[in-house]
Image 1 (cartoon, rainbow, N blue to C red):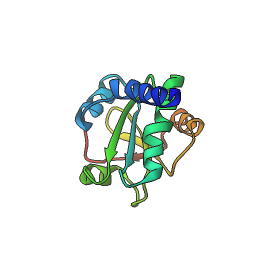
Image 2 (tube, helix red, strand yellow):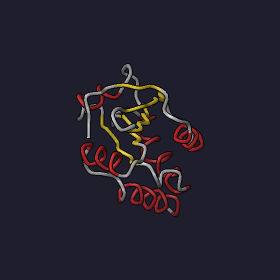
Image 3 (cartoon, rainbow, N blue to C red):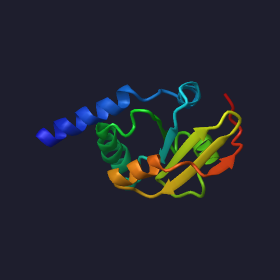
Image 4 (cartoon, helix red, strand yellow):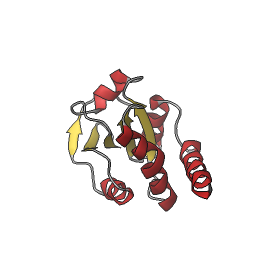
Length: 136
């Protein structure tokens, strides 16, 4: 019972700081000069649910996402947005995007990392430059 209460409390902490739309997340990342962590997943994907409901809240508790704008994209409900950021069709995918004034630099991770893996992913600099059709 205690673990269920803790899991719900951790999820609430993540959701309290989570933007409600991609446009809001995008503006926040640019305005506050923070990395944008996009997680693309699906409700039918067990690994996606583990990442969204367990791994990300654990990382949030460590403070590793304090200076990161986090946004979850549901692959089935937001396919157009998901496809702009994804490479291939595998879910879950994590995309770290950094706005560099005139372009996004980003990197991707496919699969379900551990909480430590997410932290390492967020600490490493984005390496690929792309024009994804978004601008502030």
